[in-house]
Length: 453
Ligand code: AMP
Image (cartoon, rainbow, N blue to C red; front, top):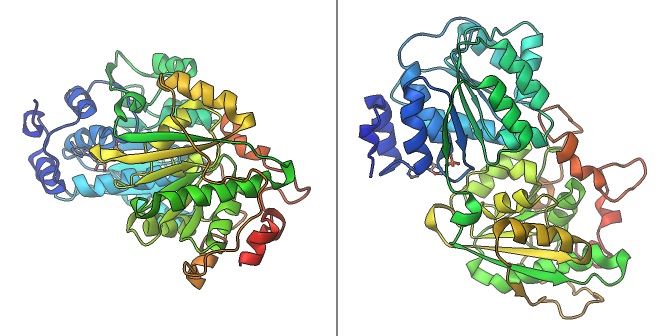
């Protein structure tokens, strides 16, 4: 097996790797690092959890250790589809470059232009950005991309989902033709293939097993949910969710609950909180500081249940998530793979339970086709199909401060927050004319849920 010290990485990078406790490179690292260090373009087909972030940050740091940054001309550029992913990549740089003097700037929505401008003015080695925000800076004349020697596109398939491909093409065209490109995608849709054919030059292709095949440590199950009366279906589903969480008991140390729509993310989190569960919401309409606070709480274990949309949770690296609950079956089968991949990381056991209502059966079949196995059916823990909801359990009172947490948000819709195009399935939210996603909880929650508060 290859060792890190056989990969020609900078000794200071090797020291940081040792301090991070990694013993040997993962397959994507083993494949991508030598090629990247030789200055070759890399096409990495891998998803989060495979060690792909280090597969580009480690060689980048090694290459950038030689040379110096010039004012307003970043030497390298990492493009990420979401702010969270960009922040995570920035953390990776901090970890692996801690023994070197490299500078970086993070250009994401919600972080002030002024601070980032000051950093860029001084010159940065690494610029990590979401595409929309990067172009905003560029158009304000604050940034020159002609000094970019290395450009990374991370999670290109998600960029495609979010409608960022035109932005990516534009950014490619603003960087020098001679740049080195490291390009990562979990899947190779034809549109992605077109981009790589156009902008990558004789890339080294490194493909690692899809998480669908690697996730043997994740126990999966699906509850086939018959909603009964349509007007009560949503609250009945939330009751099923609570029962599923309860059934897992202490084994469920923490969980991510995925909903397809932003409105449901909010409603679900509010409903859980009202029933005394320690839950908070995360999706693209919450302001940056709120999202970071929620994520930090989830990472450090002070928040047990994170209710999330696909985009917000994409690429989230929380090593020990015991459970994933799919409140809805995702519309795109790959999203299922990404969602359940939040648990069972680094060889740990994990459990992923999906609630499938009648209209989602087709989507479930598509998932089973993709992962090439049937997801075991588990009994609905709520026996009555026509729900008559119980009063909340008094012993699990939510902290009063928690009840406020997930609710504050700004109507702050920027390009790089939530998907356009195919990814905007959140727009199919239940229609309340004139309210959009801001569906007040007193309308959305069932009578019992309201009383529970
Ligand atoms: P990523 O696929 O980049 O999201 O990485 C997933 C997780 O694997 C992160 O928590 C990394 O810190 C960790 N990781 C990356 N490389 C290694 C390695 N060679 N050995 C062990 N863990 C690693």
